[in-house]
Amino acid sequence: MMKYKSVVLAIFGVIAFILITSAYVVDETEQVVITQFGKVVGDPVMTPGLNFKVPFIQKATYFPKNLQVWDGDPGQIPTKDKTFIWVDTFARWKIVDPIKYFQTVNNMTTAKGRLDDIIDPAVRNFITSYRLVESVRNTDRPMDTFESFDNYESQNTIRADITNAGNEANKNNSRTHISQYKIEVGRSEINKKIIAQAQPKLEAFGIELVDVKIKRILYVEKVRDAVYGRMIAERKQIAEKFRAEGKGEASNIRGDKEKELQLVKSQAYKISQELKGKADAKATEIYAAAYGVDPEFYSLVKTLDVYKSTLDQSSTLLLSTDSDFMKYLKGIKGE
Image 1 (tube, rainbow, N blue to C red):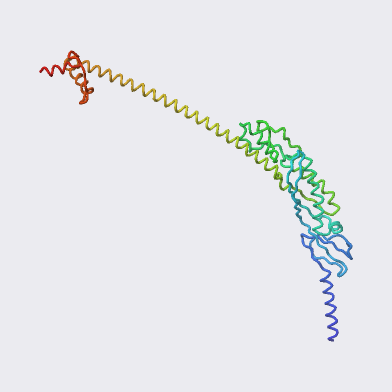
Image 2 (cartoon, helix red, strand yellow):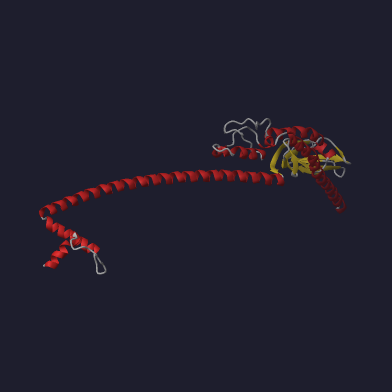
């Protein structure tokens, strides 16, 4: 009886082991390819759940079903207008045919190597086929950045520099019209063209290229320094123009102030002279009235005032005895 139980337990153990080794679980983000002696058997398992395979003979190989990231290495690329720039791109891709993927690339490292070999040349091809502005802008929408410069001649040069950096604008004085830098393709269309060129080459690996984007565009260092230098110089010109206009306006204000000040002074002088004239006339009138009352006394007072204002202890006068200036002195002496 004990021997019979041991055999039954052994049989159940073998069955359990076979079930465990034959069962496999597929996650919602995974897809599985079943292989037998290295060759694919049956269709890939795409739906999540519990599945079974022949133990020991068949093997389940898992591949991701969700989106994967490809990040390209930044590289120096010349544009159609002979501008050297650094371009950094990234892409989203996924495995749509796991059997092809297993038979060709088999792992993520090899897959990313294939993506490098296919996407990088496509990016280089289209960047070199178009002007820099096509890789930066999508439309001919006017750049609001330049509205404050529309009254200055130097805006044309600044707009040209920003255009070379990817922000093109009209070289005319109008901020609503762009002709020289007409966008024919645009950045979005270039991205689509890159996908269209790369996708057929990736189908052989069971890969679908979902999206490609230009992440960043920069000048190479030498060109960037030259552009920044020119932009700084142009902005200094604008600053000098503002300063010159400010100085001119200040001069106008000072001129108006001086003109107004002179007008106030002249009016004040006129009023003061009129008051002085009236005062002198009134004084003269008083003097005349006083002189009419007692001419001799008036003459005495005025003469004494003259003595007081002209003579002091250190004064010396040489006058004749019949001088009118000595008239009252002689009278005093005689008394």
